[in-house]
Length: 147
Image: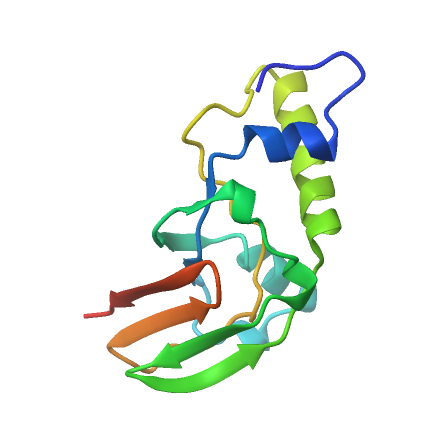
């Protein structure tokens, strides 16, 4: 998205979305015990993504109300964490407006096919499984094998 005079609006972002996807971000901490480091170092460490596993596309016209979007995280078929909702759709779109404006102002506009993860719905969890999956009504299911 090249820069737009006056900046983007949530409606611009919605119109530019081709699809939404359920995803799992795998964090790759650089610390042996991330809970033993100062809080700010731990927060910075959360920027250390090891991988993002993206699920199947769902048409963006089916954009859910994220504030009420249930989701479950499972390990080897057993549900370990759930949420009934999180940041609402208006907040997610406002973040994407900021990102599109910020990227365009730096000459790095968002382009078709760019994957943007919008934040953890369930939060970080230590992985103690071979099969990791996340599921949400509407967006669907994504899983991966950790070998």
